[in-house]
Image (cartoon, rainbow, N blue to C red; front, top):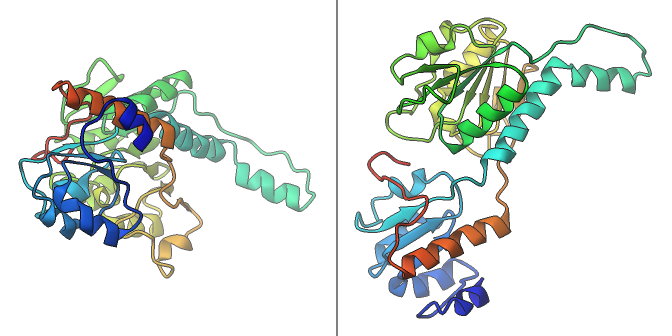
Length: 297
């Protein structure tokens, strides 16, 4: 990375700290930071900082950090995670309708027993959050001839078959076979998926969360699963990560736990995204992935 920045004639020192102690030494003079999950208190020392490029799509740790000056520009990675997250979601949905776990069990038992399988075609597929990740999910769902419903703060009527505003959760979830949550963590979205939402869902619906853990009220979700208010859940994100070993979600047969790997960071693409933004920064052009810190994304 450092050599590629030098080839771009990037002025100033280019430093790659290997640990927090090294970062503490250099951060007071830093103008640009390219990193991930930096200890929040260190930003209080960054008196010369102008721009932070996050290595991920989520920036809730940055926008809620009281030590980060309001004058600092924050950018996030956009357009990189959608395809991988969509693949993750549909691998789980296909495993569900084709009963892959049952097939594996029968194979382990050397048992030949045909059974009926289901299809995604015609199912109602709901996406909460129609940003770049949500739109990748729309494309995949339409390829399976599903009916696609979407909910977002910004109108996206031309993206989905049926669009709902952020105040229409109950109407949005009523017919869904699958609810996929891609929403960022903001004061408005925290626990927006709660017992009221679950009470309006079909009993055979499945909830998938690939957004942020605190968007779903995990206590309410657990209760809905235990009472079979919904059929199941696929969870890649949680309110507390790692998910505590004694959490009941590990034990529920209608839950799939994934350790926040739905959208793996692709190092080369992430690096190239940053380099492209550095060129824009040096040329005084608008940066890509600019975060509205008031909206938290």
